[in-house]
Length: 74
Image (tube, rainbow, N blue to C red; front, top):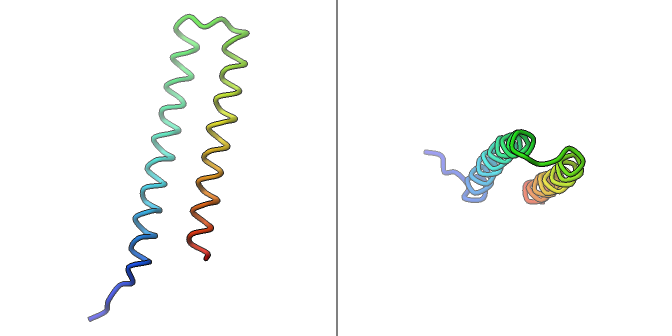
């Protein structure tokens, strides 16, 4: 009978949680973008706000991926 390492299980669960969080983040970003465009935000404000939102969200997603890789490769 083989025994799994608890570290491997924790990393697997962390990877699944990260994947789910990234998918939910992408879906919410698409919904937010549609909502902002459709319901009453002027174009000039929308483009600036949308760019800022996606820069911050993308930065956080990249940071979370880098931290996950740092945990895996330690």
